[in-house]
Image 1 (cartoon, one colour):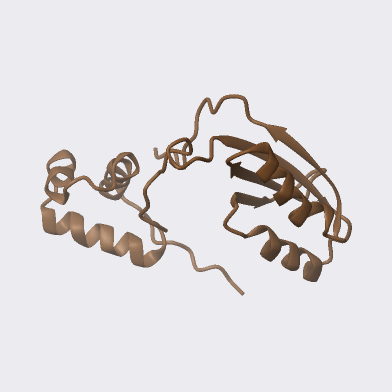
Image 2: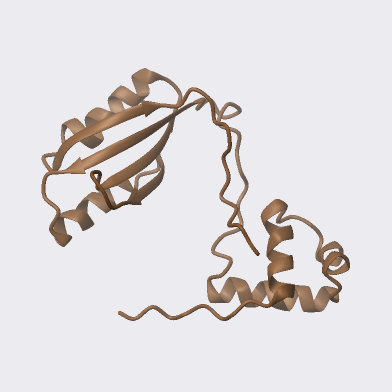
Length: 158
């Protein structure tokens, strides 16, 4: 299935996106003042970028500590079988709420996961469910994060 290209972004769109990536609750009037557009023009552009998929979500970034999940674990996963059907099943299995991020990658690993948990005991239980009991997992390696130095979903904009 061909991928539909996203519409080109002009300097106004990029300026709006920079503001929204910092704070998507910023008043449209204030964004308009910052980028020299009317509030209505800013609103139309944001709506267009949402409809086209340029803006894929509006979400809150939640403190892991505040919700009792202070431990971040990176997991490198190696599949036993990598036929497309097997990979599709693994993608579904890895897309559970306990997995914060899942990437299908090139190189030695097949997947890289970011998991946040409340305790190592909780991770042990999750690892049993996701990896040990899964016949298509050849092996996995867990890396416990000591300090989240930089965490961001911001896309660098030129």
